[in-house]
Amino acid sequence: MVNDEAEVRSKAVSCETLFRSLDDASRPRNAGFISLIVANLKQAFENLRMASYDTLYGIATYRWGREAIGGHGGCVTFLLDRNVDPSYHGKQKKYNIVRRLAEAPDAEQTIERRNLDRLRRYVQEGAFYKETEAAVALESAT
Image 1 (tube, one colour):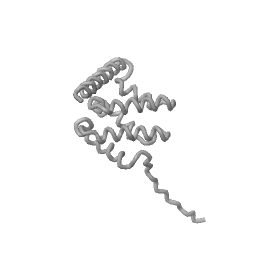
Image 2: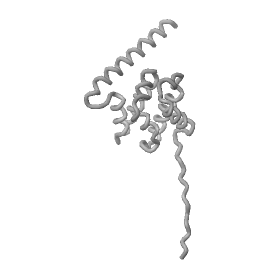
Image 3: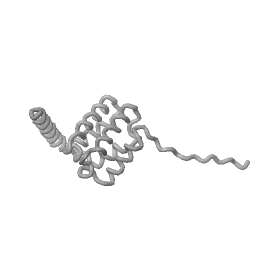
């Protein structure tokens, strides 16, 4: 068991090191690796979007990843926007990321309070929630 824990820690450190390297490498053109992922999520190519969701989900596994996501306002805003990905799989993957962020044991420390409340509401509403619009039909007087 001790060996397994050491291996998990080692892999986590390797992941964080890779993330930091990618973040630094993408800074000249973008605002970091999270910005690059968000840009990919906005593309029309479903394969690219799904891979980007998977990457973001993996990053959200770790505290340093949740801090990076929580500290990137554009990423949180994108995740909370229900109108940006029309696909079933995209909505499900986005929900899984939001849920991972909202239910993390360190969520209070890694995500701004206002955003955390919005993430938790998103989780309560579910992956496929759609706000209903009330429409009033008027009868013409002719």
